[in-house]
Each structure stands twice: as structure tokens, then as C-alpha cells.
Amino acid sequence: MVPEADESALRRALTGVSGVSGEALTKPYSIAVFQGKLFVSDTVGRKIKVFDVPGQSYYTVGDEDGDGRIVKPLGIDVDGAGNLYVADATQKQILVFDKGGKFLRKFGGPKYFERLSSVTVDAAGERVYVVDIGGVSSEKHMVRVFNGITGAHVMDIGKRGSGDGEFNLPRDVALGRDGRVYVVDGGNFRVQIFDRNGKFLKAFGSVGKQLGNFARPKEIATDRQGNVYVADTAFGNIQIFNGDGDLLMFIGERSEQDQPAGYMLPSGVAVDEDGRIYFVDQWFARIDIFRPYGLTEKDGFLGKKLPSPSPSKAKL
Image (cartoon, rainbow, N blue to C red; front, side):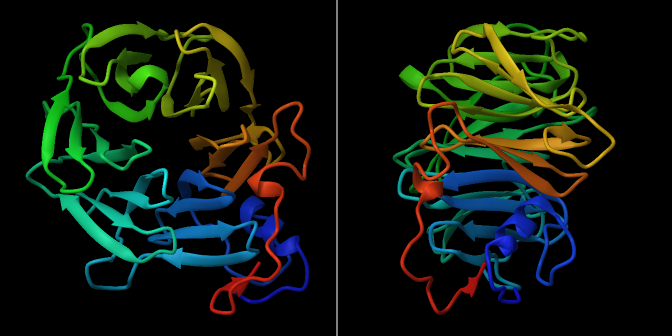
């Protein structure tokens, strides 16, 4: 990235505003956040692009070759130590990097995955939930659970179908309070809730055009209060529910114009430690950030700036 004199570089990189030099987002898909550091998967760029806002630096994760090579990154997540987990759809593997981008390990492979979609890890980095979206001719519509340290396969959640605990084109997983596992069941237009051991608890949502319905649900996130955030590509919004699936509010609307809170092809959603919401739009190649009421612009990790960035990383 070409060094720039002020904070316009950060704004340009995240929003896609042109007119300045540098490396822009190409086709962002998913986002994960750790203490003000934004990890964004770029499917066309074949990298994870990292915006370290407190450190005012930018770098990429993913080698050109070798064990840390990334080919088609889709879903990503971070654990409580800031380690990054990447779902590579082409390699059909989960790649793990430390918070600085150093490759640590990988697991999975064609033996386990057919159409890899997303990855979610618990705070301790001990349990990893990986979604296999399956397909028309596949029965692998499931969530596969792995030991995050050893990469060993632990268990599977769900199978193809429309009943309780069954999936049709699942998309993403989020972890909530009390070990709850929330799964976006895209083809059944709902979110299903399981306990930590994969036992079905309940489901919410149905196909429709009203608030609380789903049209094309994609990624999902939770916050520290247990609320659930579901990105819907067709609606162009995020719907926010409580932990039991009761609708609280929505953010955004479908738009053909590149404007704040207007979305053409939204995909990724994340909520950081301070309650800020991050929403990725693939079509406009931008990330919108929403700050909760009561949190000032300078509060939290995103409001902090370190005295000086690392000399080895380009300044935003």
C-alpha cells in the first residue's frame, strides 16, 4: 500500500472511495474483528486484508505459495487470542494464522468438505465449527466440528432435510451465550439453535417479505448481550434478534446506489468487543461500521491509536 499523509487512507480502504492511490478491496466477503484490528477476506484478491486501526497500519495475510497459501478465502473468524481462522473454499481447508499473520497450521481437506463456506471458533480456540454448504447433488449439508488445536474431527451437526436439526444449504455459524450454536439454514430460510453438543433447541424465521422473515440469509454474528445479527443479501439489511429469535430491529436497505446503509450484495457481518457492527457489501466493495448508542467515536478499541505504527507495515 502506498503511504498516505492522513486518515483518508483508512476511509478509502474500508469504503472503496476512489481518488487516492493504494490497494483497495476487490471483492470482500467476510469480516472478523479483534481489538480494533479488522480482518477482511477478499475472494478475488486471494488474501486476508488486515486494517489495524489502533496501530494505523495495513498488511495482508496469505503466502503466494507454501503452507500459508490462500486461494479462495470465504468465511473467517478470530479466537480470544486474536488468531485468525480462514475457510479456503478451493483448498477445502481451514488455515490458522496468529494475529500478526504468521501461518500456524491447517486442517480439513476434500475428505471432510465438499463446498466449504464458513468457519467459526470459540474464544479458547478449542472448538471450530465449519459449514459445508453441500449442493443439489450432495448430502453434505452440515456443520462439521473440529478440535481447534489438533485439527481432529469431533462430530457433525445436522444432515440434509427440512426438519428440526436438518439443513438445506447452510451458510454460517455464530456462538452465543450458554454455549448456544446458531446456524443460518439458508435454503430453509431460518436460523436454527443448538446446544454445544449439537442438540436441536429451536428455530426462528421463515421465507417471506416481512420483517423477521428471510429471503437470502447469509452470515450471522452475536454480541456480548446475546443478540443475534443476520445479514440478508436479498433484503440488503441486517436483522437483529434477541437470543431466542424475537426481532428487535433492522439496519440498512437494498440500494442500487453506493450510499451509507444502502446495499446491493451484502455478505459478512461481525460485532466487536465494544458493540460496533461491521457490515460487508461485495458489490460496492466496502465495509460500513455502526456505533451503538452510548459509545462515543473515541471509545473502545477502534477509538484508540497507538503512538507509532510498526515500521515493517505500511501506514494507513
